[in-house]
Length: 151
Image (cartoon, rainbow, N blue to C red; front, top):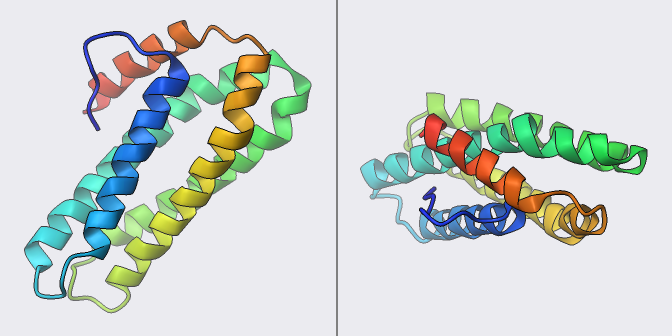
């Protein structure tokens, strides 16, 4: 996932990452079974992007959202559990080869889980962050800096 030079607020940064990884999943879906090397390369890119993304959310975003108010606790807990589930699939995919049974299925299910997670974040968590008047610019800068370290 790319980080731009101009500072982005947290929601803009994360939404751009969401769109980028969604496009990578779509590209994967459209690859043929013969494109094993390309599939592996793209799946690895997807996994790396998601590991970076989940890390910056867990280290920076979620603590800030959780700290802001008690009422976000369940929302953040659910997001953390969804991350754990995704990380489990990511680890399995990284150990596999595109020719292995269930490889494509695991990438597809990961994509579906990510889509669900993204939808909840964008429809529930992001509006809540605006409502709570979190410093989205500062959070965005911290996350961009951490993302750059992880890449």
